[in-house]
Each structure stands twice: as C-alpha cells, then as structure tokens.
Amino acid sequence: MQANQPTPTLVALTPAEFEQLARDVFALVQRDRTEAEIDVAALIGKPLTTSEIAQIRRLLALYFGELAGRAMDEQTAPRPLEPEIMRDWMRQHLRPAA
Image 1 (spheres, one colour):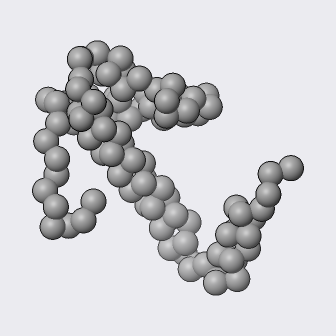
Image 2: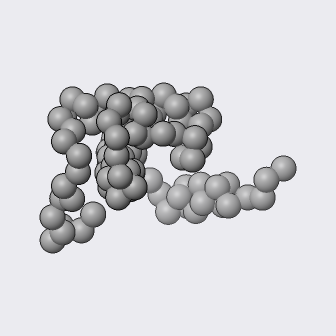
C-alpha cells in the first residue's frame, strides 16, 4: 500500500481478531490450502460482502509481505547479501519444475 493512500475501512475487526485470522490463514497455508480454499468469511464468523473479503485478503497480503520483509532483513542484517547470492536464488526460483 502506498504511503499516501488511506487504510481501507473494513468490517469491524479488532486487532486481536485480525491477528487470529492471520494465524488461521497461515495454518491453512502450511497445510497446502490454496487461496480459493480459504474461506475468509467462515474464519471470521461474520457475513462479508465480496468487497470486504477482497479488502481483508489485501490486508493479509500486506501483513504477510511485511513479515517476510522483516524476516529477510533479520537474515541480512549481520552481513548483507552479495549480489551473486541473490542472482543464484533468483535462478533457483525460476528453474523449471521437475
């Protein structure tokens, strides 16, 4: 989300409810569930419009992206990654499936 954009208003979710939702979604992802298989409305236990579901999914994506960024920063803080290492990672990620 860009800095000049306001945070979208969603269904009334408390910070604790959002954290619980994030934990539930993460648990489902760990069990190889796809986005289509994760029913956000059922996890929250409230009826939601398609717009609200889209907003919540966007916020979850931002939340998990921020967590991933922090984890990467912690890994590289002691010793920054060399460009060669990053290129190797990119090549490994882009390799064809076996």
